[in-house]
Each structure stands twice: as structure tokens, then as C-alpha cells.
Length: 189
Image: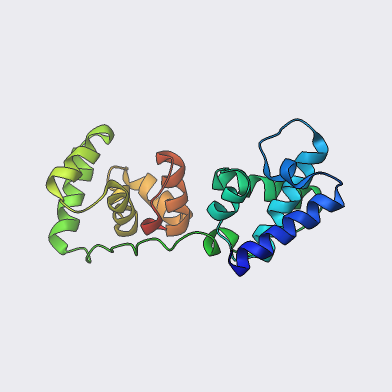
């Protein structure tokens, strides 16, 4: 048994004693009794806050529960007791992700091609044309470039362009695009 496991077992035992509940109930699958739920959630919170164990490893201690169940239990305890969740607990307890590969800078030809697509294609056709005519560029990245370069304003009449340019800064335009399209990729933020 490692030091982390010993520390985790000690925390679970301490919480079980403080709630006068057998340890097996705290880490087991038994449901329904509020005192067991409270004890389990406090134990999850303390393990998240006080040990370097991952959410997945903590879930294994609690009978193979999913990492999201551990997060929910710890969060429920912190909310109920006015505690703050440990800072960056998700990042600290999650294996590092692969570094995102950034796409190369836009060439003048790509921006011109994007302008052509934007002016000539209907909204529903743009994503398919982007995939075929601008390989390696995602629709989200194209929407961002269209907003940055003013291409997104190309279909508007002159009065509307003037009103938009005066009233909407680039960040606000991105927010509008995000609302309209439902989401923006992280690379576009």
C-alpha cells in the first residue's frame, strides 16, 4: 500500500467515524440513507482537497465510481458547507492533454478564397465549401477570420456596414457569432 493510499484510507476512516457510519457503507454502493450520502460526499471532498489522487483513483476507492461522480460528490459537499473547491482541481487531477496543433498563418490567397465563399455561398453551404476549398481550415477558424477581416460584413448594404462597424467591436462580433452558431472553438477565442 502506498503512502497516498494510506492517507486516503485514513481520511475515509476518519469521516466514517465522525458520522458514526461503518467504513464499508461510506465506500460501498449502498444508497438512500442521507447520513451515508453526506459522509461519502465529505470523504470525496477531503480526498480531492487533501490528496494528490486523481478523480479516477478516488472513484476506485469508492467502489469503482466514475470520476464525474467523485467531482459531483465533492462539489455537493463544498456547496452545502460554503467551502471552495480546491483551485484547478480538474486540471490537477486530469492527465495532461496533447498540445493542440496550431494551424499556419492565413495566406492572402486563403483569405481571398474565404471572401469568395462568404459572398457567393448560402449559409448552409459554407461549411462544405470550406472543407473542399480550404483544406486544413475548420469552419470555426473561417468564421473567426471572416469576422477579423471584415468579410462577415460583406453581404450587408452600406448603411448596415457603417452601423455594424461603428457599433460592434471585434470581441462583440465574435460574441454575436458565438450566439448565432452555438459555439466557437477554443482556437477562435
